[in-house]
Picture (tube, helix red, strand yellow):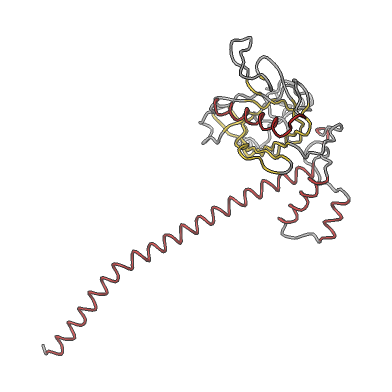
Amino acid sequence: MTSNQRSKKTYLDYLAQWSSIIAAVLIPVFLGIITYSSQHEGQIITQRQNDQNVTLEYVKIAKDILSAEQISNDTLKNWSWRLLNEQAPTKLTAAELENLKNNRTSLPSPIQSELANPQATSSMSGFILIVLRETVELRGSKRRTVGRYFALYKGERIPGIEGYTYESPGPSNDRPGSGKRIRSGVYPLATTSGMRYDTFEFGGDNKFGGKKRPGILIADTRERVAILIHPGKGFLSAIGTINLSGKLKGPEDDIVFDDSLARVTQLIKAMKEKLGSDFPKEGFQKIPEAWLVLAGEPADPVTQTIIDGSEEE
């Protein structure tokens, strides 16, 4: 081997060694960049999905407002038309949108017209509790309707008043004692008073040796009576009423009573705080400017039909 060959070999060995070192350093860096890029892209996709879900919630609210005959407030109607137009792939012109608002156009309603209370002429600008029903869960032969709730006051979302709702399957507004959830629609809220549920004196002993629990009455439910928003426990504590809860993992999870109790208490306190002197001082009085908006009728997961209230129990 000549000295020139030895020199060339030494040079190649030198390059090989440095290539190995550089590769050992740069490969983890490149992998880190790729991993970070993938994670960042995943976070962006997740955020977009979350934003889309929030937008969908508001689209549902706007549609229900424009479908409800008893909502006469122009501010809410105009807000609903603007929101729907902003989310639509094909936009209305400014003139067309203004024409819809000026003519007080309403969307066709899937809610039966008899649900609308002709006496309800409130501006709907006060306290609005919104429940978006999503699905029906099964545990053996038991069923429960799952939704999400949040509250608005004068169009602004109230921090902390949000979570999940659990109700019976359904719907039915026709049969007293049917036990099914009430139909989607817009309902005025009212105070209640009794031995078990009370809007004012909850926490005190009742005649059965227990404690009164907080409750808000849902009014104008036709033949159905005593439809309340109240605490629940176990799989479900509702006979057509609504239990508030945190998020549960699935049908095998139980409603935690203390959490549900705190949520209903928080809801009542928020209503009293926001409405102030307008909040009634006794039970079975409609609460001025307080409404429940129920949206969605999820089908039974087995039959894929909505269980009608006219069926036999």
